[in-house]
Amino acid sequence: MLNLIMDENNKLREEAIKKVIDKIRDRFSIGDYEIIEELRTYNTLEKVINQLYERLADWISIYKKVESKNQIAFVKRVIEELNSDSDFILKPSNEEKENIIEVGNEILRLNELREQLENKIIENVKKLMPNTSYIIDPIVAASLLERAGSFEKLANLPASTIQLLGAEKALFKHIKFKTKSPKHGVLFKEKEISTASKKERGRLARMFANKISIALRADFYTKRFIGDKLKKDLEERIKK
Image 1: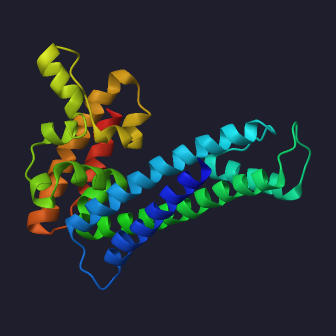
Image 2: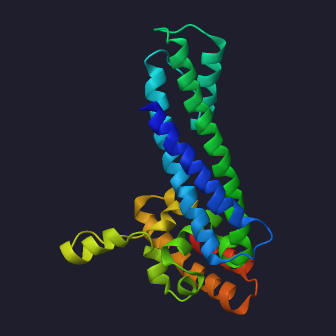
Image 3: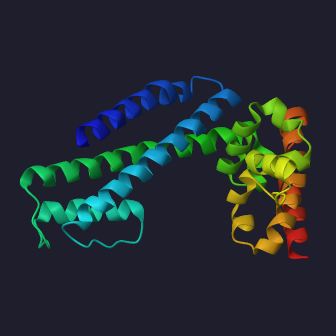
């Protein structure tokens, strides 16, 4: 089982490095298709890291209670505990200890790739969509782009559609089964929206979508920077 997991993740890492990292070197011009592929690989890495983390946490819990503040810190702590040969409730064999450490190191390697990719996405989004990435998180902007399929399509979407990008399934259920209408999709990842009360999220998502729509048109058509004005106006409206 462990060998299967490791083989799958070795393949994932090799493919990610080959298909994505090579494409995002500075000698290439930044295009929307590159950001879309970067983000899809980034999301895949997130899922694999989370799955491996859950396996690691379950595995080490058999032998020792390990506590830490976050996911990566936890992994580092597990490796440290195993390498130091500290006290365990049950003592793992040397072979099993090595296997657990290898899973932990794999998580750390994948996380390093994820961080590199995240930084590249942010850099590329800021170049392609300076106005949009100024008023919302660049990763959220990249997520909107990925959902739309192209920069041109995204720039021509009405604000009401931008608001619900990523909520297609919920919208379909609403139309077909008369369930509650979704108030946001990808935009929920924006901090101001996700941390707001449920009552306020719909209003905030609508306000953000309106400004994003304007920002996208400026990014795609006029190439004029108006992000500071849009953000100031948005902040003032949020306070009301």
